[in-house]
Length: 367
Ligand SMILES: NC(=O)c1ccc[n+]([C@@H]2O[C@H](COP(=O)([O-])OP(=O)(O)OC[C@H]3O[C@@H](n4cnc5c(N)ncnc54)[C@H](O)[C@@H]3O)[C@@H](O)[C@H]2O)c1
Ligand SMILES: [Zn+2]
Image (cartoon, rainbow, N blue to C red; front, top):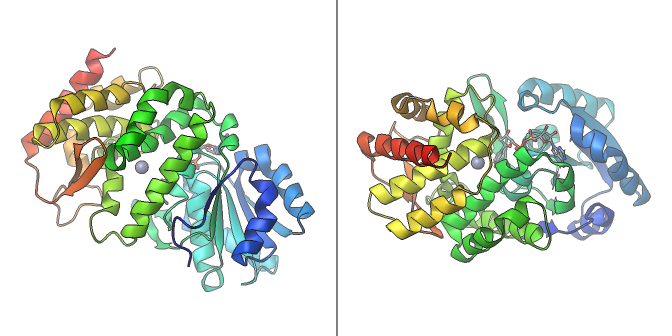
């Protein structure tokens, strides 16, 4: 198995180098390609042509571009297609898409023939900076998201920020929330870079875009490398803002609210909670909220998905977060910009409610 960081390649255009990159990793030239409808339509032909020019045999699979494709039943159907095409252990699987395709493809690769190599070619900002790295692969169960899966590290993660040119702006801001998260939890100088060039990055301007994508990917890989199976609490810091976010996503019924949007709101709550509990200085809270304030949401979204929510209901739905242990609400906090930690103790309910109320007030004051 590769280490998480050693297998990340950031390059434009990356597809034309796949042959060499595969050879260097000892990967064979028989490749199952998994797309969703959008990535097939946008990039399928160019990628398949390039692979054929480089001497690959391919088998193409396409799933609908939605979260429900990340299911056992769609994996089951795809297994059938692969068996019919005589795909065996000598093949590998290349996932071309966002986190849905990456998680589903990783799940299939981890289980097909007891495991074939998987390569990630992420095409959303979230996938480039988060979901394609770290080897967590899963499908959803009707009773909960991401419950059935494996740790199956990709042999390669091929990151080409040029794919983002076709990505809708809502998805860019969604992915940007995870990028900013790395600044908060892991790297003050990265936070400063994001603060200084936020607008250039969301406009996909170089060299800022590639810098932001690549630093995020390597920060995540480093965290994962140090705590692969989430034992020391370090990997858990990647959930900064996420306990609050899961509460909001659950209240929204996982519809009409992108994960990243919930995380942006959740990070405002987590920053305020860090301040309320005395870990974060006021000046850093103001600085942190300043960066959160640069995010753009669809019209009326913050009103509907945060301001209109009852804080107690939001608190209750946070309890259904699968990351809870012994029904305790664990929070990832920061004690300075660039350093996150998993707060081991129970946080008092009134502090959590207070943080939610303060965050709502802050969002209201910005309108
Ligand atoms: N494995 C992990 O560690 C991990 C971490 C975070 C999130 N996830 C998972 O990731 C999933 C979300 O991923 P996502 O946000 O990438 O969503 P997604 O895969 O649904 O992609 C979002 C939309 O963008 C489209 N798209 C993809 N690339 C495009 C491009 N270049 N141009 C235009 N459109 C494009 C897709 O077709 C889709 O409609 C969730 O299922 C979540 O659970 C996994
Ligand atoms: Zn996330």
